Image (cartoon, rainbow, N blue to C red; front, side):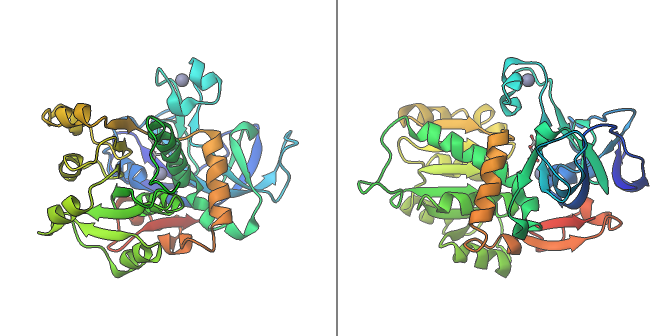
Length: 354
Ligand code: BGC
Ligand code: ZN
Ligand code: ZN
């Protein structure tokens, strides 16, 4: 069977004929797998923590939806069920033991298609039922591939709710309509963040360093959000007129982030999802703002099984409200290997049909 494989330490990925690797578990036929920045970094040999499960080859892919072909010993799943597998699998720490490998203390976890476990870019795989989620709504067979990136958003939302409980946060009328949310990035993850947070009624701005395609602009307009080009002259003016209350970074550019951190309102919240290690290290002058304004900063990575469940629920119940379909800008075949390493112009989310 076909699989997309990465040789550790070597640039690029390739299609390889492989056997079943797992002997036990639920047998799943892969329907779609999504490609994200992590996969691109793997393909370009730019992800420092990539690890094979055995030897020096790793089957990549961590965003997937598939159909149960043989439930094996499982009584939770039956043939024909639509399922989404989880990326991160627990190690031995106390948090991993309670299903919170997303908050693992010692890093002793594995991640399918990323570190220490073969992933889902293959025609079929077997998996432990503990790490599978059922998708009851058959209508989301295609957009259900967005569950994995959406589960990250559900954890971001959880983090936001936790931090916003430091102080009463509402607008005097029980809503968030007076609060400005800035999302850095305009890719599929940023757009999913905007969908989920728009349900709280925020005033949303998506920011990038360059103009966006008409398609992305229309998705942003469609949810009543605005796009800001941080390279344009009036960006800082706009920022000053609509100071951020919440900043969610999905790109990891400390430069654009820094400008908005300086403008953040008191009691503001910053959630970092893109990897931006520089915010604290290089811009020490920022710490004064953070203390004086009671700013909360949190990093957020991965998500729990509950976050996956919430993601499936969110996509299913909002499939007619948000344009998930428009996020999928291209569907290709496994052989179309170049698409994994290189992002197409105007791509939002590229997925592979198996
Ligand atoms: C995945 C996360 C994972 C992270 C780091 C992301 O693309 O969505 O689940 O923890 O990569 O490996
Ligand atoms: Zn991903
Ligand atoms: Zn752990």
